[in-house]
Image (cartoon, rainbow, N blue to C red):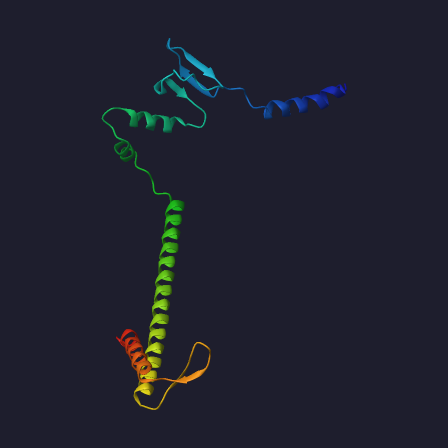
Length: 179
């Protein structure tokens, strides 16, 4: 005896639909004002107190119980967290170690940058010191010195200009040559 063709095609399709169909179950559960359990896929009305909400989507029973323990008088969130010891999470510990390593690496890079900046400033001060000392020695030797005026012409320095240049160079030596 041969099976009807519609059964061979329809039966597997029906089974697939039944297995993949999401059961219509209530996501919210709470006690109403009369103490009766209410099941719904909608949130309870705002007048329902938090303690009467028995189940809500996305909140496991363990989290609900821990939040209920925290809400009890005489307990604090710190004591309820201490009451349930947590096993160290190796992934979290590894991530923490990586973060600390990156932080140390960033601090080391910052220190190296500061050290390089300090060396660059010290080299610039040493160069300025050497130039100021050389110019001051040349100014003190006595031969006439020439400078450029605002128009770009070369002029010889008179005694007042030499004294002001000496003072400027001496202050440059004091600023750059102190160790």
